[in-house]
Length: 358
Image (cartoon, rainbow, N blue to C red; front, top):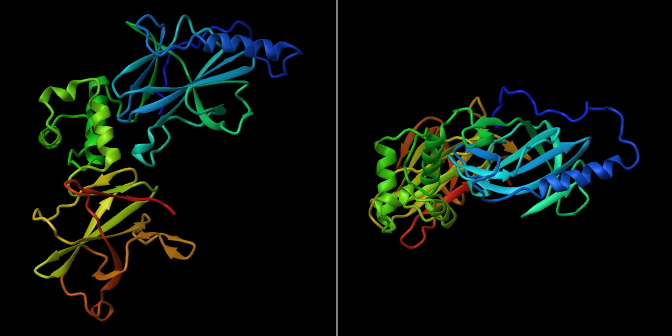
């Protein structure tokens, strides 16, 4: 979410008006906004306005300014967790400042990081949109912006993007590392920005497997290395990632002593990833089944069919936690047959199964 700041609003050059501007005023306002937004900069230690990321996500942000009833937007600015980025030189004297922030797509389905107060138009890549109340191009779309007010910091004025966890800068960076380690297949839970043995072990394993020094985790490129690992799906073992808005319950089928043993359930919350324990010996057949459930535990349906992810291999399951070795006559034994899908593991890496709505 965008962190609210209890400071006086920017001084207005004129009181707001409900009536439309007179002829010529709209164009003049847009022209002034373009001049303001052309002072947006990517890297300058002397910028007066910074955008600070206190979430556990690498974000892309767009800035909007409103002056005398005209609004313009510009973006996208990548801002890493725990970092600040200079976005505007000089005193931000516009009537209103607005921000839209989004997590990178590799995180899957993530709740909006800012409230939907006003819809403004944005573009793709490095964009500048004048008259942003309406989209005029096929590559533009409306997204929710939140009004923000800068706060004074020792390095100048700053706008802050925050999570309910209210991370500090160091906590936000560590929480981001934990989140990316989990997405890459390393058990760094919980994602809380607090150092601990699980985080230390997961981080050490990631660095060791890639031949990286222990000081790499403090470098400016470390988040990019983690994001590359997530994109490649190169973590060890199996990783379930829930990219829906629903809780997902997942089960495994694992080959043991010539037969298949079904085990479940693992709970995968929306936006989270879970890595189940698998046998360490190689060339073991592994299968997966998962289903989305509501708050009462009932399977969610879409178009009359369960919202589930599986295949054609029938294994027995039951509603409570289970370990089942015999899969004959499931229904006669009070069990439910479900179709499991074989998991394909890449050479020397793992497999990531992403649960998405059709």
